[in-house]
Length: 633
Image 1: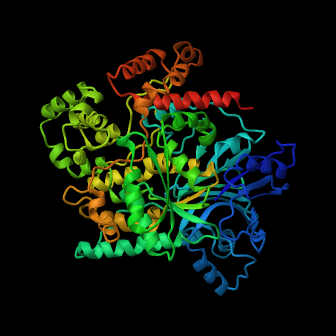
Image 2: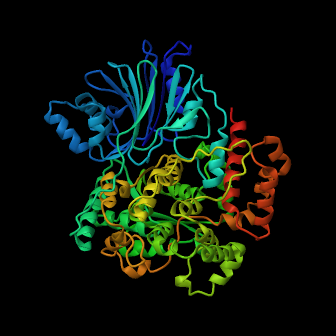
């Protein structure tokens, strides 16, 4: 995995040699690529590309970037892994291409020279973000993988286009000027992350997943989608067992391709369905115990370490488990703004970083189960969508009455009531879930349900009336698939994949996500939802695949998730830190948030009257990031 950066200036705006500027930009990404660096420039065209390399495939100098095609036309700075590069290499060799090394970068750049951009992209299986300079047409193209596993930002400053894997690379360009996008801050407070094409800066955007941004010779920018998942009719006569066999074969191939590396490799194992399935398919294809890693917490509702240990023992993996408490979590918080480089408030960023840090001691590549909930329909909201015909059909007054009763009861009280249930049937964080269920019951439509379950509430950002959230597609066809598509286009790349990328890259660890192989995604979008949610069981198809490798009873428990007890931490060990950032005078002076609203939420949360940890954590992550940016030269 790597970091890329560069720019194209269409006027003489930078006096420093272009190559030096590109190298400076790239060097802000050393954590993403600690093994090598490089820069390439064409002063007459005003273009320069920079690169930082984490060597995974072909550790030799033959994999050095930026890389120029043999015919001299294309120059590439690339971040990612192409898992079918061996197959593509054979195709190119049969067409007369002679390779200098065996890196996947060389396959891409020679593929561009032989097939062009569109045809090359159609052939790639992998995760990637790369920049292509076409010396013949004098066009710059920025490309991001199909589901947005790897990040790519760009901004325009005068007649200069600058880009990078992270915002810090763009800020390093001499012409870059940035102002905070208040609408993006509002989305952060609503959802816990910045959404869609937007960034925390008005002047910088993200290349959308499955898209390429082309900057023409005249400076015109055009973003086009080269891939979008479609709901394709499946074979109505295919039996569930046949579908399971087909999806398992496809997923096994995706895992096998991601086990190819010239460096040590392992897997994240949380003990849940997704990571256990990936680990089981890895171990089934390995002649030696694979290395697995998990983190555990001191609080039972948030701790799956024992489940991970049981899965590891059954599969025979070489397992490493670490445990941490609130003090260790609090000690990590000051480094989050530097790590994420943009305000980000999914609190599972903390255990994700910790497990990445531990894994990096033994391996350089790790496979994870991320994406399983989104593509196999594993969230509670997907079950709600499957039942919406019945739930939504209840009389509106009755739904409002039930919902109002739940919302009027504090999460702590609901948590105490939930303890009356048997432990193996009581969902973790039951009070919080029941409280949110109240809002769901009162929702008038399926889009309203989705917005309710994926947001913390209304924002309280000053001068931010317009939201940046992307408009959702209207509900059509299968409601479960509609909701999954919303996840695939938004929550997955903007939250889940952003979290994993920054946490792992902070320690120079490459994380691969086989469940998000685009062939797997396309195959699942062609299946009826009855094979994903069956008999009230979520992720039915993935579970059936897993149960061929691990006993079913190991997973006979409510879904837990990969989170930390932020609700209680804010009332305990993090209280003083939060109080400093949320001080009324400070909020007034900085002018981003309505102090009265923030203080009201904070007071109610401390008193246990309500759980406002989501909105408060998002506010704190912005405050900590803003403080960090002011202190950073």
